[in-house]
Image (cartoon, rainbow, N blue to C red; front, side, top):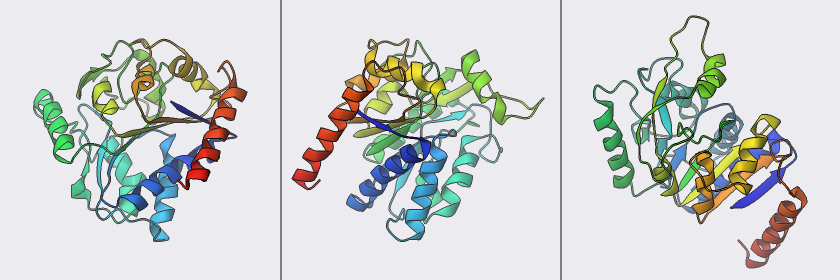
Length: 263
């Protein structure tokens, strides 16, 4: 894994956005894997700005989101489809028929999961997948104990995840306890994975992901198996890593090499 440690959350968002900008400049018809949550919002703002400045276009792009709450229609304000429209799709030159989010209102969610896998395959696979990480190490809604080669499926949310997400729901508002999520195996199929993490509350999860064992107890540790996974984190999220200076040294040397190669 490539570990990039930056000063603050703004730097993390900018670095992450630049990865996606370079991807779209290199391949205009890229297939993007996208994520929801508070961490990606600033990255999406960077992509919107780049689109408006005509640095990139989304006209030929397809997108696949990681997950969706089971039981919510796409028009529901708490659905992830609604979030993506509000935070990104409504502000860029993308054809929304080419944007895919797991159908939370599917009559048969089991069949819908298989259908989602088939849609990703038909698109040629995901070129670059964006991830956040939960305090318990979950990626997408792959909670601890998730199979490391799992595929898109219905998943029960842990109490910790439900509690973390409760802030997005009004008092008394229905909050789903089930989701449809890409599996860890589905995520690992992406050609490149970019995980963003900020804040001290993510420090334990980042330490387990980077320095811990490969285990279903920390789903994000599966990224140790990926040949092109980039973790972009701020100082706070990196605070429990054993040797931050060493990771910074590795990244500095890596950037020198890339500059020398003109990449």
